[in-house]
Length: 211
Length: 211
Image 1 (tube, rainbow over the protein chains, first blue to last red):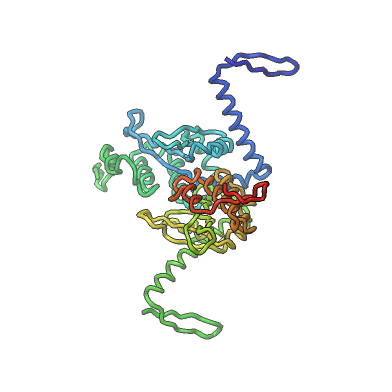
Image 2: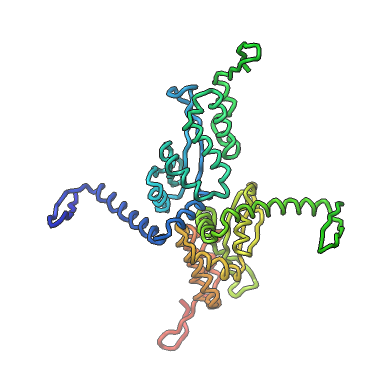
């Protein structure tokens, strides 16, 4: 157990703190200083920092839309857009800068043997209020097309397009056209489509038909 | 064989061109248009583009100093600094933007199974006149320390430090401290050092001594 002293106005307070908490406080404090140093480099140049970050995302970031099996959603699938930036844990500071600029998101260690950290924004609010306004303003070159598809899916979800079967299928199609045409996905587009009710349309003679 | 027509003033000229050359001309023309489109996005915002490129390099670039066996150099080794940016061949346009901005360097396909392109500047002139002035102005966050070591080696080479054995060893030491402490290098620092003459210093009694 350690003791920390802190001052509020003229009064000095004493508080015991566990070793673990004190180590954590030291680590956080060091990281805070690293981040402050970076932000100081860009002081008065917020736009320049933003262009830098866009460039960094074009290299180390990703825009993805996962289609996840769930009983909680209509049609048995959830559409989950997610913005991520990766970095070796040695350089956590760059992810902290992203977190500072976007004022949302989470940093966590990726599963697997490599010590890679992941900065992630997957809430619809974070994506619509922070991610999209940012990348609409600070353009991507390499990931520009992928970002446009991501953006289209997010806006369509806001309009509740995915609550109709036709809309849902359209969004799955766009998602599967992102990031190397769905390469690396666990399920094929056909596996998802095979679980869905077919689109029903009305024939000219007034009879419903499945196609 | 194809025919191309071109106009100079009021005169129209006709010239035969091979199929291969005409295909190449079409590819180059498409790429040129892609690059022009990107540059147009940043029109009047050269600095913003530069910050973007710095961010991109912090993700997908590298500053390295190879130590290469050669009979052409004093001590039997050459010190070769090199700046590189990698990208999947699908997005060659970003490397062309780098080439346009730096006005030097080469784009080539990396050996190996993956279709990855490499934009590379390895001439001392390109490095001292283009790379270093650029990254002194547009800061790197993740690769900042590696860049500072790269810069130190380049400037020391300009001062011919590597032509003395002490200077040469110092630069090898700095090079081996870059990029994960020489991890991934073909030779250990000790293997290089074992081929070098030892530093000779003068003892107080006037006799030369090896140590």
